[in-house]
Amino acid sequence: MAQQTPESSLYRDFAETFYHSSLASGVRFIYQIGAGGPCFTFYDPASLGDHVAVLQFRADGLGFRTGSLTELGGPPRHLVFGEPLPADLAQAVSATLEAPGFTTLPSSLSLAPDNPVFTPTTSSNSSEMGSQADDGIPRVRFPPKPEGWKGDPGNPNFRALGTLSPPVMRKIEPAGPHFLAFARRKRHGRTFSEDERIQAQNKVKKIEDDESTEISEPEDPLMLSRDAKDWKGQDHYAVLGLSKYRWKATPEQIKNAHRKKVLRHHPDKKAAKGQSDDDSFFKCIQRANEILEDPVKRRQFDSVDEAADVDPPSKKEVQKRGFYKMWNPVFESEARFSNKQPVPMLGDENSTKEEVDEFYNFWYNFDSWRTFEYLDEDVPDDNEGRDHKRHIEKKNANARRKKKTEDTARLRQVVDQALEQDERIKRFRQESKANKNKKKNEREAAAKREAEEKQKAKEEADRQQKESEEAAKAERAESKKAKEAAKNAVKKNKRVLKGSVKDVNYFASGGEASAAQVDGVLTDVELIIGKVDPDELAALASKLNLAGKDAEKVKGAYEDEVKRLVSDGKIKGEELKVIKY
Image (cartoon, rainbow, N blue to C red; front, top):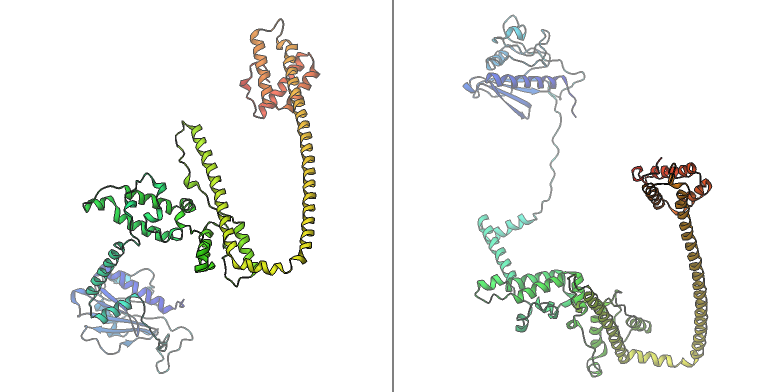
């Protein structure tokens, strides 16, 4: 931030003075920044050009030009800080700025006789503005130059605050959409409006072409006449025109195919063309989109999509076209059901034995996510036939397990067929046959050891299982005894509580207790029994046994227990009828 100097403070006060005064007097000024510094031009709107005073703020003082606009010219006359304003300039400024109310200055200006800033002679408020010189000419004096201030060489009263930076050559390359639009207009000789119109027409044509694009495959007339209620039997990919993509179709392709089908088969659009308003196939389209748009439902449909399956080739086809060319599509199709990814591929004749073994081991232990709930029988949603609903759910579960088993057997048969036709397996077998006798004994010995270890492990597991079962049986017996004992103890303690109040005549004083008294005491006792746990019940029974038939001690024991239950929040005092504390 620039340092605040005395002269800059003076300039600010000077500007504020003229601005606020001009609002009331009608005199106006224009503030400009030129090469020489800030500049104020004061004028009277009623007689513009007749009385003009230009005040230029410089580092060394104020510069003035006075007169009419046409008379102004040449360099301004400068004033030096600390020197009085020349008489002719002061008179010109006073005449220019003379107007009613213009003499009102803010209190921030010093009007002391030893430092007058501006004192017009013709002001009606001259008595308030301070004294004037003997010759009647106003004086403006400025503070002295700051200590250590130096001017530029050749002009001691002026100092440049900075210099312009040297010019820099920069390479500018045109780029961006606006430059491309300019180049397009330049090339074709178009105006702005012509180019915008042509671009808008091209955009509309592109959208129309995209919407009117033909479906990628022909539509089967039988498919168009399908009953929407038989949606489980329809080929959802064929309905949307995605038969060649099927499970490989991306969500974006499904979305675009659905939009195109809707634009073609919407009932309103068909009705507008005078066609049949049957919306059966439109419902098929909506159902297909609902299934394929939902990842879970699409996975269920892909699980039973037989149209995506590739049948295993026969031996004649393999001999004619080659083993790898015919079997690779089969395993690529089956690989989509694998939980483990990536799936090892079939390879070629240069595959090693380890790679081939890994391939067949993977497929013989194939972990399939394939489910068959898409083929489930619909379960009724009503709540009345719950038994029938359970029967349907059980039937569906059994059907899924059966289909899963059949699919596993089918895949294993496919792998067996490929293994049988694989020439690499035959080659590997021939290579291993050479050292078969050498390794036969080792394998037999290893198998025998493995069998013995398995038998031993099985016996050990059976023994541990038997021991654990016996231990668990004994533990259950002990637990049962403990529970019976605790149950009997609770029953006994309840009898003690009920017998204790009976022995003291149900707290009746004199004579037999009334039926109401007996009923109230027994009700309180039952309430207390219901609020205490077995340990607390045993403790209370022990106190009552010690109290014997002493009515006061028995009642005191009950009152202590009631007090504890009330403090624990387990019972409320108003719930008790007789036993209170």
